[in-house]
Amino acid sequence: MDSNGESDFTSYWFDEPERSEWIKGMKIEALERREHSLEQLKRQNIYTPLWLSVIDTEFEVTMPSVREICGRAGALLVVALYSECLLAEGMSIKEASDFIANIRKDFQVDQYLSLREFDYLNNSAPTKTEQIHFSWQYENLLMMEWALGFVEELPEADRICDVPFVVRIMNQFSSLADMIEKSQLRDTKELLDYADFIFRLDWACTDARLDQLPAPNHMDPEVVMERHKSIFWITGCSHESDWDLVDVST
Image (cartoon, rainbow, N blue to C red):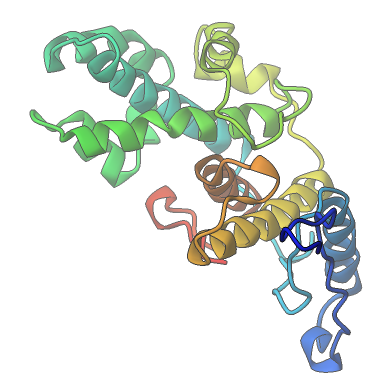
């Protein structure tokens, strides 16, 4: 630092030694997955500690079926579209409900709605906060589409998703059965790799927020958190099949 308080120093990386108790009992697969995530994050100058837990292995997880993932995608589409109708289009509750009616039927959405989603769609006076919350479900829908093989590559989590693109993907399908038939679920290893990565990235975003600092590498913390929720539900890492109860703590 010079006499004016300026410096060319831009970043500092702390390579902490790993303690044996941190990895005691951990599976080799989980440790290798963690190491891969740490390498990815380090390339982006994003620090996460070695003491963070590892996620479950392929042998340990129980994933939802393709049908359940497609059903969840349909539910997410409906609540997000409904919110968009209310927030962006200024529709009445009845107009918004009528707009999503055919999609709700074609994708058998009522079978897959969570309790909170069902209550929201049947609330005659949803709050603005509720509408905004459910409008974020396009982010989760993108994750379902990616897991099912309809999106080749996920964009960086530094901005909200391309909503028209996400909706166009769903418009390809005439029904839930059509979507199921065309799905090609990604390999479990690939899904778990991303789950481990986003879990650590979410920790970094949360840590920055608690320290009143900007999110690392210009990430959007809300996008990161929604992806964390989705991938943990898809992989079964949350140990909770109820969408409303998925744990995204870090």
